[in-house]
Length: 106
Image (cartoon, rainbow, N blue to C red; front, side, top):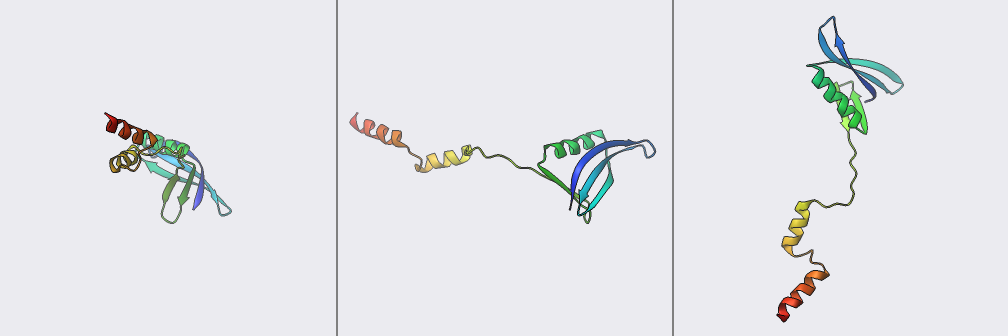
């Protein structure tokens, strides 16, 4: 795997088509590879994926481009998990016990 250092969108006037050039480095090697794309929208999509990724690599054996993303977890539970806890009655806090006592007094 070679690390992708940069991407460049190119319109090849000779071939009259769009391409992406990858600037690669790794394993003591620096190289540039060009890949044809269907148009500027596809090129823009690849460039945005590269810019948003935390790491990106190219596998010369398979010709595969890999973009890796790292997402922060701020300790927020999914709503689905909270709902399932409420349904099971496992997540009753101290307020829930007080409410049950008040209902019994009425």
